[in-house]
Image 1 (cartoon, rainbow, N blue to C red):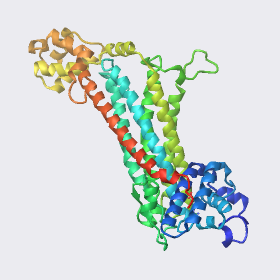
Image 2: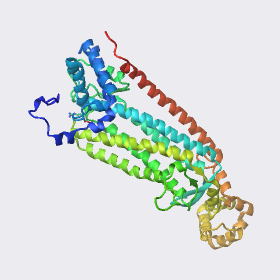
Image 3: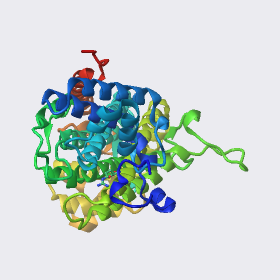
Image 4: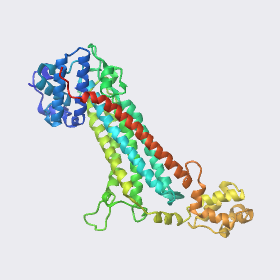
Length: 486
Ligand code: ARG
């Protein structure tokens, strides 16, 4: 039996069981993190005089060799990446290698590796979210005067602008960004030193390991450190939320690129076609973002169900969380990149948006508001007058308004102060947008301000992201430095 763990047992493991419990296929994701974790742990053991300098150097050299060989150089039949790396270290460094696992368990080791792999992913994800926000704001910036129908219940509701619409999406993605930043603070904490769960009697220095690995602090309680996957649940929940936001804009773009809307045209690079219908240009990438939102929701549900009611501390069930975390992370990251490309390259058909806004009676609210301002009749009464006029679906004349108001109020509004000039203004979608210049409204004055303000936010978000990355890189430099001979 060459399995370094099985001395307690009298036989090798049944092959089928071995495959069943193995996490090797998924552990590719934590191969490099595990090299780092082992290095930091051994360097600390050396500083604490728990292993000798000679043994430490041999182990570090073996780890470098394994890193160079890559994940595929490991024995894939072993239970997981931790055993596979340790076995290889023992093979390369002999007895010194057998000291590497002193004061460590796979339970604190795997939790640390997942946190390192995840933080790398979410730092990149933050970059991708900033890119998406920027592209939305760029298109918004060019379209502060591009009028379009705003919808409620997917029915024409009130006029707005494309800028106003896209800033709304950018703001949702800013909140998603902030949620990921919040989650990051709970991811970048070091569980190592927790051992199996009860810590260790060796005089280790947990703070030192955390610092070497670029963590901001510790998961202090050693039982908590190996038991918790709430950071994974939190991240997947945040990813699922972000996917929902992506799916909503994907759905709109799918609708907008139909002949019925005809508001945008996707760039051919982001379109598919049909094997039978030669005329087809299909938005498959957007449809898949919409569909994968369901899958990420599923990952969240899976992880919640796996963790529910698990007794403390470590249980092998926790291994089953990792694939869902990886899947949710990579799905969101690719969806973000694809959505950014789609928005960056799509053609905006502003003439079609304007035509749709001018057709019909989308300014009905503004007419009711104008009646209130000009005649001082209550809003509900004005709403009733305009409501009866809206039955035709067309913009009313002053005479038609008078007939309707006579029926509802007994008076003609033209006699109460409603003029042709104010009616013309009320019925003009552009005017209706201009007048909505209060904070957050669609008036260009406000959308220009909001775009500038959001652009500034993306720059400061990028700065604090770079600081996080620099901090980690500075910490890891020591771990990645070539092993010094004594
Ligand atoms: N592959 C395992 C996981 O992902 C590593 C920890 C194994 N620990 C144990 N006590 N069997 O959770």
